[in-house]
Image 1 (cartoon, rainbow, N blue to C red):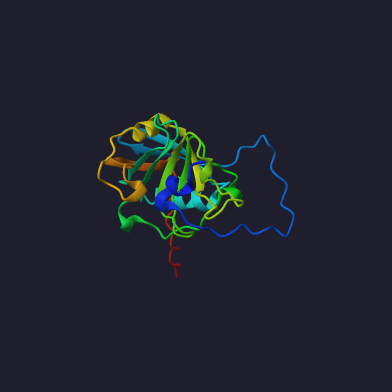
Image 2 (image 1 turned 90 degrees about the vertical axis):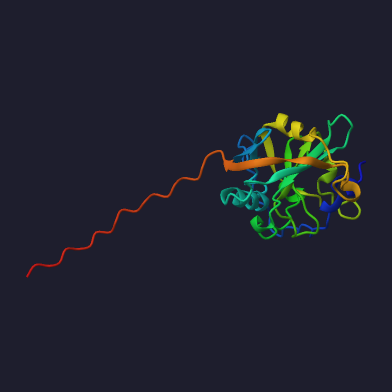
Length: 229
């Protein structure tokens, strides 16, 4: 098994255990109903990527990223890391995020895959982190299957994994293009060396596929006419 320390490098940390429920869980919705998502389109210099944010199964993390989207904080971000775990690139990840610290919101709480039921397989988008509660708008896209990054309460050491919050629905060809861009021979430190993109791939904008409705203008309040004497 690929060691978590090699896969995630400086992104690793710990997280709090999930508390047991003291009351029975509510019945599951019918299997025919799909969990709620909100689609966003990430426009990069190599093409568009459509992502379905898991607003129902991962509401904390998806809501955090959606706030960045709505406040235009991800516009101007970039992909800066491309890591081929297998030589042919069938398994790997590409990482992006905000490089201007002034655009970052405060960190978000860790939302493990044991509570969301999501997993790090083809097309998953997950939040990078160090210690729990330190994750910000740095995220990575999965190529192939990297379930070693899921939470595993039975595993040793840091076993709480990373927070999957979305999935690519269109544009995996763009993700693969990013995985295959030239890598710097000098950038990065430690295990990150050899994974940093020579010329980061720009993210021009990230927008909801269905924009927020515009607020309806309120009609002007009519002042009562003065009473005639």
